[in-house]
Length: 78
Image (tube, rainbow, N blue to C red; front, side):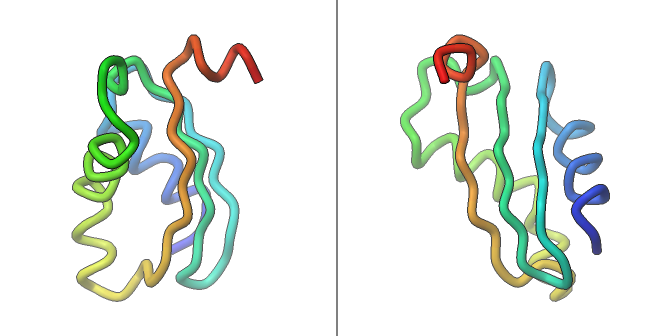
């Protein structure tokens, strides 16, 4: 799996989502911006992202993911 595949997977799974993915092999860093994160605590946001990556994690295609999650409003403040 490569960073583009991780990006496409998440952007397809989460509505109104933008993903910046970096990494190679089976270790990735992602920044996920989605309106689905509105009102969710950080742990719930991460669980939502991990749920969509679960198949790739279980298969070993992804070993480690470091993520930052933002709502569109939060991301615009950066």
